[in-house]
Structure formats: structure tokens, C-alpha cells
Length: 409
Image: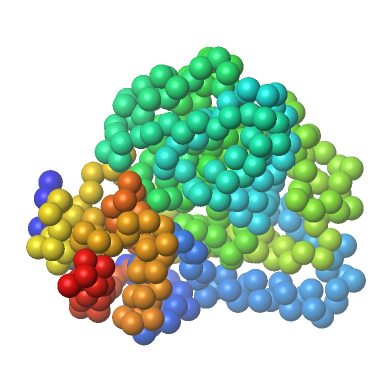
């Protein structure tokens, strides 16, 4: 299908309460918001709920903090089923990178052991893997995956790399830099057959994949609630049924340190845990106002429309197809190729993101894959078709000017 050919625009989302979805988020109306995937966005109802929780803590700290672990545990019981997990297997952590650190801190390797990562992995997590390898004299190897690789092709790449020395596989359920799915359950099955354990980075998975933790097939899984579920920032889940899960400890020891997993994660002293406690409200907000299954369908339609509109504007300036085949696309994110000269590395991609925010009032994400720059487009229920038109009007001229500068014209 030619996604650069425009089709009728989807109608702006209206919520069950009767208003437009856009009005339910406290986003700056002067800014074009097309980068939900990076930091999320919290509905006004949830912001107010968290503010009230913080107010309670400030009104009576002695009443709040000793009881906060009970509230965290209650939130954990509410949220775990959303990712297809049991509460007794689930712990709250501040974000996906924190969850990865918790798991990597607990592992013990031998010199010569190997860890497999992919060239689609999240940079901060891969850094943690390399630190683990240095501690024990282990080796990190990278499985190279073509951007458009099918599920079968990805599995075969792992099959070729899973030697007897591999002890750990770290793989993304939804890749951050390339906005595609990976067949983690099949990879995990293969890894387990070869005697390796699997850590699945599901940072983007909650909300985009139903029962994401159960879908992953991993020994350990983690995912952010502050992205697609729209919970307050600083809320993520770590899920495991591993026999040695009592080796997992919070990043900070607190008074719950002598409890078992996951209860020891509920007690974190004076840390602001209102992001955890408010997370069920965010998940319920989307379900009550629109429904999660319907939301995934709508976000797909919005992302496809945005690809068509922005792709049509960029295609005359790009030699390859702008709408990029990523093999296993995801619900709400798309990858669009940029003109030559842009996004040659991560620094260049980040510079473009800030330039467009400062000069055009557009929030967007850019990434670099094998020296080629891409726009990573993402949409949520508050996204409207006019946002894509505004991107074309305000951001595309800046992108073309930046490309000319980079090519030295």
C-alpha cells in the first residue's frame, strides 16, 4: 500500500463523557504534539488525582508515608492484570531503565559467558548490559537485524547467534529507535532451549500490546506506564516468575529490604510514590472514556494518516520511500525517512528534535539507523489530523532547510 497517498482523515476522537479527547489533556495548544512515545502525556483528571495525593502527603507527612506502601501494593494489584501479570509477580519501579538495572545488578556471570543484544536496542539498557559484562569478564555480542526483517527472519538471526556460551538475551518487545515489534516469545523459546535466560525490554509495550508481560515470554519483563497508558512520569512495572527473583532488590535499600519480592519494592522511604499510586486512574481513564482495544485501532488509523500526510510532503525530497517498512509495525508509531544529510547519528537526530521545537513549535522524535535519519511519528487519542497538517506547514520547511545546511548548499 502506498502510504504517501492521502485518504480521508479520521475524525477527531470524542470521549464517552462527550468532549473532544484533546481537551482531556493539559497540553500546550500552541505546540504540535507528535512525540507521545518519548515522555507520554498525562490526562488532566490524572494530574489532579496525583496532585491531591501529594497534597495529602504535605498536609500530614506522618500519616502519609507509613501508609504509602499499602497504597503502592493496592495499585500494584490493580495494574498487574493490565499487562497480563499477577500482582505477586509485579513490582513498581521508576522507569524501564531502572527495571533493567535491577535485573542486571542481580546477575552473576563467568569469564567467557556471552550476552546477546540487538542493534535495535535502547542505548541506556545496552550500556547497562556492557557494564554487567565488564564486571565479570563476559562478552556482549550484537545480533544485527535488518530494519524490514520479518518475524521468521529475526528468529533465524537469533538461532544463528545462540551459541552454548550465551547466558542472557536482552531483546525489545517494541524497539524504541526503529518503532517495530520483535517476536520475543519465539526468541525466548529458542533461547530457553539453548540454556539462556531472557530479559525483555517492553518499555513501549503496555497499552500497545494487550497483556504485554504475558505476551513477552521472558524470564524478566519490564514496561513503562508513563508512555502509552498515560500514567504520571516515573511509573513502570517489573514482572517475573523466575525462581531466583528474591535476588532482585530496589535500587535503594529501605525498610522493606528484608521482605520478599515484590513487597520489598513497595517501601521506598520518602520517595514520591504518587506516580505509582495514580497509575490505575490513568489506565481506567482510557478504558472508561474510550476502551483500550478501540484506542489501539484508533491510534493505528491516526498513525497511518499522519504517515500519508507527512510522507506526501517529504517524498519529493527523499530518494527512497518515505514510509519505511519495519517488518513488524506497531500500533501507534511509524518511521518516515528524512532527506539525505539528516540524522546521520544520534547527536544529529537529537539536534533536529530541539531545533523543530524551538523554531517551529513542534514536538517530534528523530532517530538514526545505520547512518540514515528517520522521523519517528507517534500518535495518541488526543492527536488530531490537523496536527499532521501543522507539521507539514511548520516543520517540513525547517527540515528541508536543515538538510540543505547539512549538505553544504
